[in-house]
Length: 337
Image (cartoon, rainbow, N blue to C red):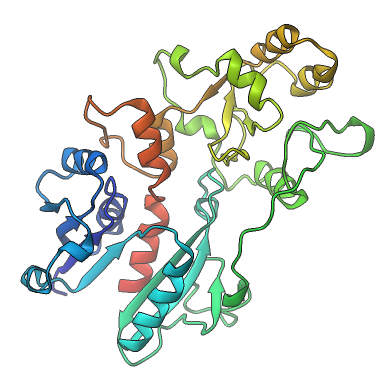
């Protein structure tokens, strides 16, 4: 087949571009478009030969689009409520066949619980081999499957579940009755998912994605943050198989003092003074995952990097807006093969 000519919209740091490379589908990214100047610096650093337009897609004329002569579009638009409805209405009106997905990297053995919405579409009259009209698939399609919809939900049911306080204990133990400790705000479903994932040997351990031999001092949680977010942190160990988030919106934190039992720290917190609480919490040696470690979890290759002028805070923000390369690469292969 002739190599595809892909246009990358809302290109960010180039997650879609990297996924296209990983898919091994013959293709060339003819141009990338994004308005974020910081993201564009990172994109140029990693893909210096790809034309990059620093503007909104509304700022590109139809003539300029036509000149690019593309036959594939990759995009990760802002997650606004109307995005999905407008997108589906548009591709239906233009004659595309499409399929929606809700997928997490854990389905590929990656310890990152990050359920995300994806849509793939192709301009053709015949339905896709795995197409399930009105359904959102919860796993990658098995084209020869006799029951393509067995892991699907109704498209109208996509919504975020309300997070409510719940009693939870250390994920290395079973939660039950009096030994449970209130130190996280999670749903019972989330707790159960983490227990199941940590016992799933098909998912890699977090230690496989961690950096070696770097100065971690700048990544340890300061006392002020420990005190403020103690009851909200999603604490994981290197041997865990789950990286998620805590209620304030950031990712899990890593407990580097693996021999310290979380229960022993948290069960007495409420009766301690602020200074005593900080002393207790510091025993866990909690740190943030580094930007490189998060990039590893997102599937970016070892050579992916950042220009030196991009701050740590900017790197976190950019990666938080990116996507999992492995998940997208597999979807591209499903669509094109």
